[in-house]
Image 1: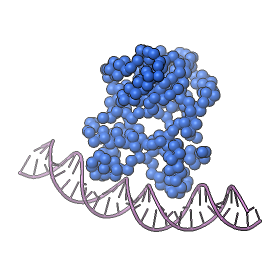
Image 2: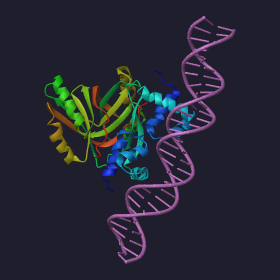
Image 3: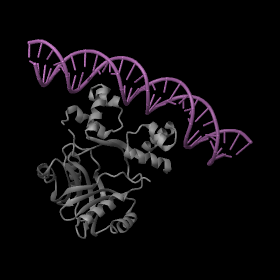
Length: 153
Length: 153
DNA sequence: TCTGTTTGCCTTAGAAAATAAAGCAAGATT
DNA sequence: AATCTTGCTTTATTTTCTAAGGCAAACAGA
């Protein structure tokens, strides 16, 4: 399944402004609203578009601290991996968690109110997770680039 | 400026489904469309909602490889920081870049087609950026949790 | 306590947008 | 050459958004 120039333009615009009216989207593309709507429906059906979301300001919501945590597990058995994965999915502070190849097992991205909240999170959530041996925390001092759109062009 | 239970519910729903019709949003909240619309406009005006975006599937777009790169700068002067920041903002492969406190200077998150593309990106973009001394790459093997909504409850 | 004001919600009506149907033309297929 | 498919357009109906006006409860000051 191939994307043409128009499909990419639709995706690009929608990634920046997911709530744009179909009429206006069609104007910017240079097609009728109907055909743009059909293309979009196809892009959703084919799985290019997974959904839409509001972009919230974390600081405004009292989540002033962004941290990355490198996590090493005790014994890297399948059950340990699985239990850790399940625990991470339940923790609302954790925005992302990736299993990586290299010096550690998981990279966790979390947002919290402040360092006090982080201390609690580290002790009560991360370190009490099954099989966690070691963690290294990196606090973000400045967000240079935040959630850039995927390159579709 | 305080958020009540209804505001939080609006933010929560909108974060998951940013394209929901105001009528349906109002139904799920239990208020009239007008008053939900007014609340939402206020939440946007006050900066809680920064915008809306389509969630695209990176794999479907041929971006099968997710990497995190730790970057160390040569001399940590303000100009070097600034030049690096500007260069990073221009690179479309870079989705996030954070200045961190700890063992290195920057943590970069990037999506690429494959390892070949990453090699090129590393050489032509990252290593040729001003003042970059050392990089450590961590390739993601499995995405356990991806872009979870911010906890607003 | 009484009065005026604000706040947050509702209903209603007019404007705008989404959706579905029908048709048309260019290119592919047999 | 005739038919089918594809992708677009226009039109009409339904749905949604938006702005106006009004009501009642909470609040402030005299």
